[in-house]
Amino acid sequence: MNRILIAEDEAPIANLVKTALSDAGYACVWAADGNAAADLLETTPFDLVLLDIMLPKANGYEVLDYCKALDVPVIFLTAKGSVEDRVYGLHLGAEDYITKPFELMELLARVETVLRRCGKTGRILSLPPDIEIDTASRKVTRNGVPVALTAKEYDLLLLFVQNKNIALYRDRIYERVWGEEYLGDSRTVDLHIQRMRKKLGLEDRLVAVYKIGYRLEV
Ligand code: CA
Image 1 (tube, rainbow, N blue to C red):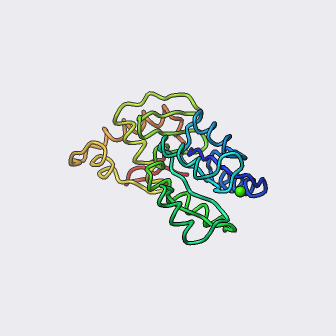
Image 2: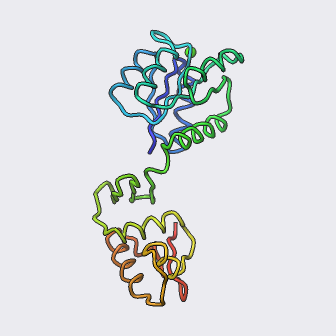
Image 3: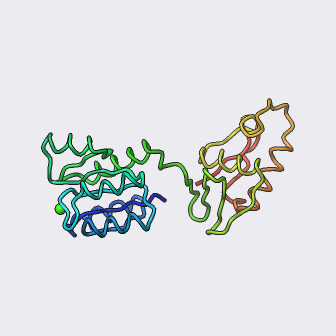
């Protein structure tokens, strides 16, 4: 789950943004002034900051310095909408700039784009309600508890999670995970899928498809 800091002194706007982003699956923290934002940045890892420019105590340009030092991408969120301000903000190193008032759908789209561009998405894949996969460390948890998978079991899980609700042919599964041509021996694939499925409690969701292979149902 991506963590987003909302630095905004107007509570109604902050609440609106926080609710929309939380509903979209982000973990959000609100800072009501520039000092609080800087303090949070120094103590908590964030994937993105939505940063108002006109903030009490320390303004958005000052907070941007902290973000840059920590390599956290920033989207400016501000009433200052003139072309000069926009160019200035981007020149200072912000990833994007959204002018108030804005549509929440536009905000969500920009957030997603920046996270993707900065390589912050896709690290944690989830298979609700219980399974999470950290693709950077190749660690898998079920209800927060680590599950020890072999390398092949992990690759199989990843393949299915990236192809939810699609029936995957045994030959394709084998070629993707084992990196060799499939010669018709289905036991290897079946054995590894059965073991992986059992370890993760996926017996009801990762189902055999007659004469084809398997499908992860979500
Ligand atoms: Ca403000």
